[in-house]
Length: 458
Image (cartoon, rainbow, N blue to C red):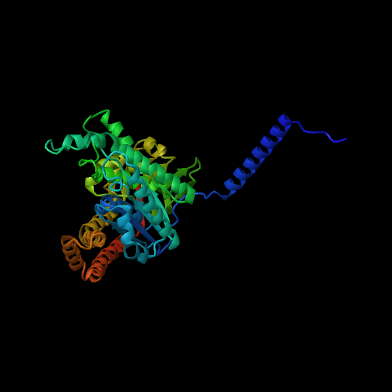
């Protein structure tokens, strides 16, 4: 005799089947989720492209990251290309993609766009959909050439700075001042979701700038990192550079040397980031030679505020020395025969940090690297990006002229921009050669040198 299932039981069975099917589907989908890479993996000869708008065109956060790479990875000859153009939106990046990005065969491409894409107004759905479509195409094109995209949030729009600078005769709309920073937050959140879905690296530029500004305004209500509300100054660009280094999982310490001597007088050493040799204790102190694998991350003087705000040295450039077993007293620390500081035995036992000590030869060596790289960015790289600014004007003029072929004024503008980019390839090649020449000088001075350390009791 067969039992009949009543309507209530039938409903329960169907519901349970649906739940099981949903769970199975979710489990299958979970297995297919892409995982973002834990860190940026760089090898000799790899190319890194910084793609962006005027904030990249400023050549500051990019320069600071270059300084990091030149000093932290001196054995790697990386190809680093700034592809920022003032005023750029995602559409503009697509127009120069083949020559300004793909032709360099990049392994990684960081993307800093969105500030202009939002068009400096309260949230507009049509504007966002244009950004969404163009950014999606850009990510697809990078995937197609085998490059690993690293999207980065738009940076901060500082409405308070804008209000302090606003021209009373041409005030900006209150809705824009009140909402635009939130619009950028939304664009960045959308971009984070795309990075997660695609398994891409991701850098949050927005949060550190906003958080530090909020923190500093507790002490000074007029504090800003972004005087014109849009383009971070040197301090803000240090914050951006540290965010990029931190979020991409690049190495965070230079070295750590731990030296001790037991009761029987037997010395021992543990070291990371280099090799200790010729260690010797004496009645007056000790000496050893040290060959580091890298140099500290030193930035130009105008970046000092940003270095302090981010605690850059301790967080991302730590050079630690720890010595146990010294008799009590004060000791001069000498490197290559020159005194760089005086410390107590207790301080040395806890550890001292040398990365910010401008008396050390390794700091001075890194500062020379930073100075040369500043020259590289201020001269040939600036000229190079100027060429691509002209190309952007041409691409925009072409789009406008094609949309209105009967408009003679637009046709004249197109002809003028075409003339401006005539011979551009040759000029680009010239500026790149000049930049490489300075980079060759950088690699002639950025290699760590064997140093002699001494501690002498005073």
